[in-house]
Image 1 (cartoon, rainbow, N blue to C red):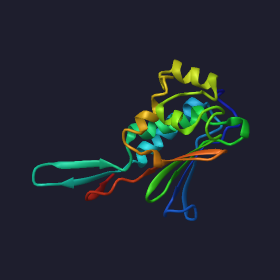
Image 2: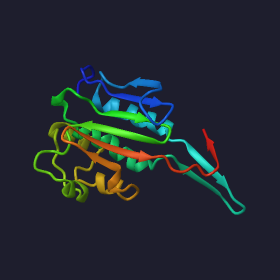
Image 3: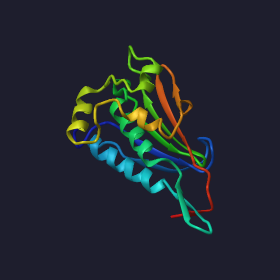
Image 4: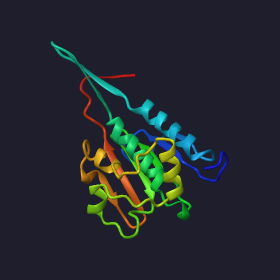
Length: 178
């Protein structure tokens, strides 16, 4: 939580659908985890382009990803990451999706059904408390159900060591508006 620490949090951007052609690599770590979280949210908001379709009756705008779901996933990845593994959350932007990866998999004693139902076992109780004090989380287990309002359970990939959330880009309607 200190202003200077050893936590390296990266946001990478690739020109394709794999991790081969890296075109941008931003470092948001080594500072307060609160500041880093806000910087990551700002970066992803900037990357969340809007496609626009102009019809005979109206203008329809669609973002690449649901902003509320992405915010929940970013905060969850940072708050629930297993920092004892010396691995930080990673945020990767591909031409067809956003991937958010946190270390640690599901907390011990929790299964996938409980995860999707909104049960919460904070891995980092002190980080959770600070985020709660700053009104960045509710500490109610509502984040995953909020993500599931837009994305399906298939967008989550679990392993013993990692949890990956995949947010596919919405289909462009017409043109990308910067």
